[in-house]
Length: 463
Image 1 (cartoon, rainbow, N blue to C red):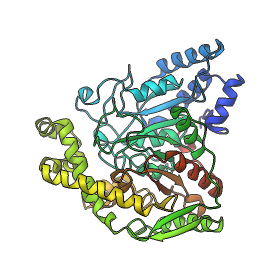
Image 2: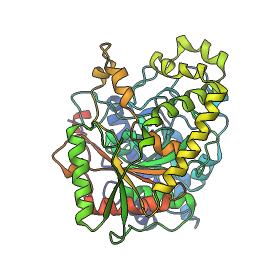
Image 3: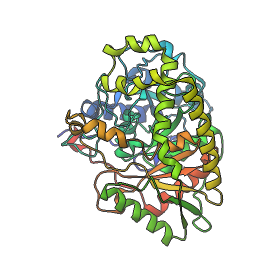
Image 4: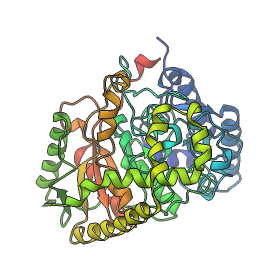
């Protein structure tokens, strides 16, 4: 069996790489070549990448090394190799939005987010796969390929989506971290793949130069192996000090009594209960509360997303795209053709009201805790089974993640499967008020310290 080049950030993460880079124990070129070798060895089966920019990445890494040698330090992400979701325009690279349709005009030129990230000195390894137009939480893409969840080498399971390739690249060590986007859960649903992720507050990170699914909901976020790595990415991008773990003493977290904890698979229920038990034993005050309006969110989400996407793409263009688009994606977007202006406005007013309710019910609490997904990763073939697998699954998909986007919250997901005997990844979601991203990351760091780091997938079988 072929040997696999070690992940250059496996031991110390982003902070460890930053320290080693500055002591010249590792160069950006060496790290970049290591990731490119791992991509070459593993991605034939994992299928995370849409486009690998090998030559450009090596040139960029050499330039970064030379810049540092000349006395210029761009900060803690300097020289770090990253992967970018293929909704985001990167100069010199294709952007497909997971579609076979021409989409350049829908995405536009490279935007301020990518310019800022490049200015921090990262090396762009390439573009990673997404569900077509980001419309789907499974990670399945029948148009351009579905990534393989690295936790099960024998059977292809869903990765979660729509940031499917971002999740696989991050957890399998095909990049130091990946950037995803989140409209109704797309950086958090890939908890199926065992990643940590931050859904940033809407508007905090600009989405110009990103293929829009729902402009009033779309946000960007880092997807990493750990909260510690996500904190490094967020702090560097924001130009702030790295947040510290929140102390357990005085921490009050809300546990919704309805919606989020209903109809959970036994493994998810057990892991969530174990996490909450650990929090309580650590001195965290876990407060139960009800939020009955949450049951309206799937309807509100679907009308908002489909209506806004049709407005972005154009009605005639969408109708003409039917034969060229993944038919499941087209069918889920089609209801947007029937969203009436008065219904849309009414739902947006309802969103404002629910945001107000969320703020009121967040009073006295540092955040809410919920399972990220109600189930563990399903087998891809079982979902595609014509005997009802996909519709039943999609009805439940995003149930626990929609609300953060609709109510303007920020959110994280932390892997917790190791708290029980479950082998497939399970996520633990934290919801915090909009604008409290630093607080959310501080609490997530505390979770990581309390729960411990989960294992990473064994990738030998993918070689």
